[in-house]
Image 1 (cartoon, each protein chain N blue to C red):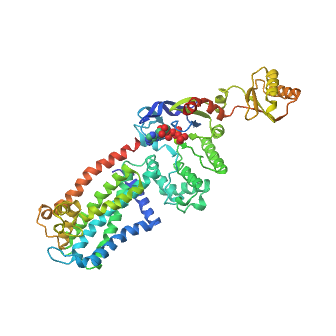
Image 2: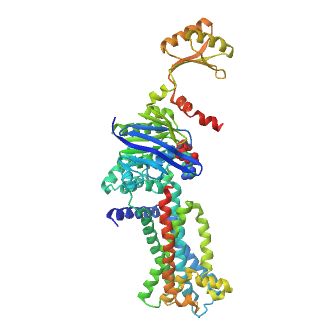
Image 3: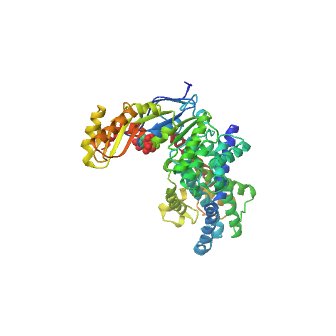
Length: 261
Length: 317
Ligand SMILES: Nc1ncnc2c1ncn2[C@@H]1O[C@H](COP(=O)(O)OP(=O)(O)OP(=O)(O)O)[C@@H](O)[C@H]1O
Ligand SMILES: [Mg+2]
């Protein structure tokens, strides 16, 4: 990367951060909403939840909520990129001598920072409700890494969808779609408590891979499955997001290049 | 004639069945203000977008400031300023933040970008609103910020797509003054407009575009010449005078008057200018016809424009 590319990326990252400073409410909502979910599921519904292998439900739930927070990030990325495309700002940026890739890199950097903050908030929230990492610092950091990798995949997906649709109001569809993805995973309940076919979907859901890997690396109670996905949770939590990036990344780059059609 | 700074050759761009550009040839010498006129859908914005590297042409060449828009887009972008048809500023950021952002992306140093932002805010009367989110500006104010943003890097070539549409007369005059000042400082300006009087006032050369092609070009003066000489127009008081006035004017000038019965207007070419005007007045007095108004005038660019693009209007009807 050239010096210009770095400067341009930094300038565009700074722009996104300024947006959040100027308009803090939407960012605060993205940071607080997962906490609300923890309270709802951990306390309102948690009493009725039984963790298959035994263990505290909130210990089981929190890794799922960390992953859900990363999944929700796709909405933040989508909204920012689609708004720029719809308002003509993307065209203005394309008319400037900005280094190749800097617009996307700036977005990714800003959203990466957003993910780090969101995750920090959620870890603090977890600690406050009694969740603890039990497997040591190294594995805990590895879990954080896997969560951020999932968010990176969501950044790429968000950029691609936004350049494809260029309609910020369509984020509503994403806001709805993340729920079936979240519920048909092991984030909230164990797949073996679901009807057979749905349990299979949940076990193989890419989100479940990250959730299961985090439970393993944080030393939290898992869902006790002994299938392929349970035995290779960490490997899958690396492979799934990388696969998504490998597919959506080139598509997003192509979308960007085709804005001149 | 200075060397051309914008040239296109056989530029083509098709959207489904629409030929937005259908073999457009254009040459703009450095330092001139070139107005692109054309009806809605003529291809003006497509032309601007191609020249500003935003849209890739299907065929043909376009060079701006010595660089091919397709082969060297970044070199072109470093030398142009663009005001798109639709205002495109960051609506969350304030005016100053916008100008700083675009200045930095033009690779001005932080100090230079700040100085330039202050300069442009003052010049476009934006200092008072500089720190408010641009989304809270009125449409005209936002447009002024948009224009200021296009000027951040002091580019040698400026593309302005309908810079004054939606502005009030005062703001419009402000934009005109800005364009003139830039042109005087040597900037080449290519602007599109719906206002012929704007082209008349600002442009050194006018290019009339229709169906994605150049249908006429030249100085505003020369384009007017394509419609023929000056005219004397008479506005009557009573429809009953039409016949008498037409006969009298025809006899006095030896030309066939053009009559618009609904508007109570009679007009003839004024080959002799003031001489013709005098002859018409004398003839009207002799015939005992009262005129409400008599004018000697050049054809407006509006008339030239309507004339040149008439076949398209006929098709639409
Ligand atoms: N992205 C696009 N997709 C499909 N058609 C397009 C696109 N851009 C332009 N066109 C079509 O190409 C033609 C020329 O459009 P263009 O915007 O260049 O016209 P214009 O002269 O700027 O018109 P106006 O005065 O209304 O701004 C129009 O028929 C338009 O519908
Ligand atoms: Mg247009």
